[in-house]
Image (tube, one colour):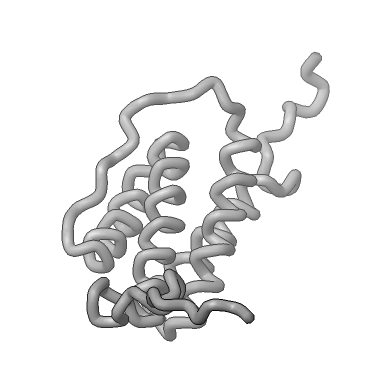
Length: 132
């Protein structure tokens, strides 16, 4: 009653060898380099040059080329940038832990601690006693 299908299915016509596949490790490297690149942009915007240099070295190691550095400044307030940097460092830490990259995990954890300290009220400059 029905005529048999004479052409190959579009779902099986592609040969697996026709296009490149990346390994899980390669995908994690790409993801980690992306998170670190975003963290580098925020770090540069905050003016933390030494921290930015350490992050840039790890991005260069993962990508095989030095990253572009963030030259411009936005009107974002420092607390907003510190919160963003903390979140990006946390994402980098999760990926670094899953790929067992100790150097980046330590760097990300230190960045999280530094941005948390920058946000805490105990480290904020206080007004002088009696000054109005």
